[in-house]
Amino acid sequence: MFVASILINVGMWFERLVIVMTLSRDYLPSAWDYFTPTIFDIGIYIGSFGLFFTLFLLFLRFFPMVAIAEVKGVLPQAKVHHHHSHDKVGAGS
Image (cartoon, rainbow, N blue to C red; front, side):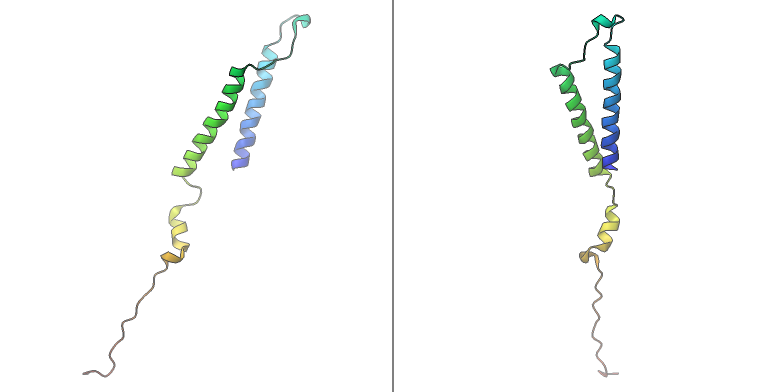
């Protein structure tokens, strides 16, 4: 799921790049030039990944993929040990 979410995020940013590059064209072919990102464009791009990873890790922290109740059931500390009381056989009966 993590890999799929990363690939979707990268695909969305490539789509955005294609849109920006298409809109940066003028109607005259002599005025066409390649898109070169500024420091602000790169900062917003890196910041959006940072925001995505922060929100994704917070999601995993508060809503884990594996239920804690299921994990606690299989831990060795969760085993119930019954202590048998030693009956006094033949004592006063």
